[in-house]
Amino acid sequence: MLNDLYNETRNAMSKAISKLNSDLSSIRAGRANPKLLDRITVDYYGVPTPINQLGNISVPEPRLLVIAPWEPNIIPSIEKEILKSDLGITPNNDGKVIRLVFPELTEERRKDLVKVANKMGEEAKVAVRMVRRNANDKIKKMKKGSEFSEDELKAAETEVQKITDDFIKQIDEIIKAKEKDIMEV
Image (tube, rainbow, N blue to C red; front, side):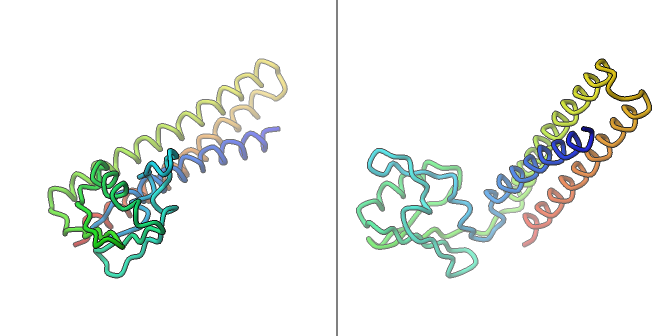
């Protein structure tokens, strides 16, 4: 019973880490990364469609993304959505492909991106703490149902806290690595 609770807790906390990694991949660190376009959708025949499903995205140079849409008539729509996004990049097209040139990040912009990454890290920690609270609530319910002894329940709360500490440490390490990546010139 308690092992199920621990596994359930670990799985829920793992989801917070996965979401953090996914969110952090959308922060550009001075290099072109196709994942930056994942959250941008284009209206394609009335259906919001991610850019990566409308054509090939390649990275011929470290600071250049090239989008080659399968249908050239969708280029203006893709450009419009990129301009509306928070990427801060103006797309160039030659009628066949769209080029996104990523400028060098200024020191100020890098610091802003670090703040954004830290905020995402805090949100992940909050999610992990919510999972911990839910697990502790379940332990308290077990206590009321007197399924376990007092000592077993104290040990269970300690184990849940240990799992939480491990995940918080992972989040800190992920954020530290992303910070280093962003500040690297």
